[in-house]
Image (cartoon, helix red, strand yellow):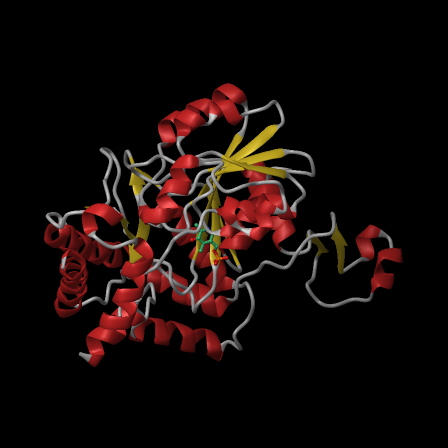
Length: 400
Ligand SMILES: *Cc1c(COP(=O)(O)O)cnc(C)c1O
């Protein structure tokens, strides 16, 4: 019982094994450098996995989103659209650059940005749209990309939930101007608790991302040997090494220790995702007849990698509100149920920016009903059964 509770309490997204330990030891023996050979290898493997020309490892998913907008040249006053049902990082990327951030309501079935409601939100100033492949299923990329072409905005995919998911055979993150990933401890693959990646097919965007990731540094010269700044006074032909900065940038580098783990995790990713899919298929099978629950819908042409398992709770039919359900599961059964997410227009951060509750009716309605189950590939048969039985017990209790 204690083991089952532990499995349902901790929501770690991935599993590490001896392969990761060995990879880390190898980097440690090289004095654990920052972004070096392991990062270069990880980036090459990652680009190949996603089917993109380029990949750049960064310190986390937030940095991936922010740098993507920097790469696109987003500046104060530009308009950036996203969904209100996401982690704040997606919307904060634009806001911290001084862009005007607005939201497009969500699709009631997939919980993703509703592309049919996008056009009414577009202005000539709209430079980027950030769809989020929420819970592990891609947004409707066909309609979004044709709208992007027609109206001239860039698509930055927030694929932090959806590493390995596909839309019509294409990998999440590989379809927009850039795709952004997080390797935070709770994501489907992780690089020691933090990490991120940007993929793109665009050489110019990649160049800017690569520069701004590391202080816009350019190093010239014949030797990497340190020479004093005075060397810039020497005629070109006599300099060994000198450095310039194109602009003021950031340090969003990943370490080689993280990248070495990432290389191994990427090799395991498809197996880990498959495990999640099997677990979720079982849960769906076991819960499908429980009244008052709306289980995830997988749209044709898409695969779902189940970063999370979303359920809508109809208080009347289930006999219990979402809040009471979360409380009962926690207090009586020791299962931590999630709420991903409280809509961003309910947050102080965006109410300060003029948003109000009720402005995005679909997201507002979902906020009253949507919960997420703790899913990770370590869940055993016993833990799955315990989870499902606890949900059914709540329903019975409510029916009394
Ligand atoms: C995790 C996550 C991020 C941010 O990633 P970090 O690595 O935590 O910075 C952004 N968007 C979504 C949807 C996420 O789930």
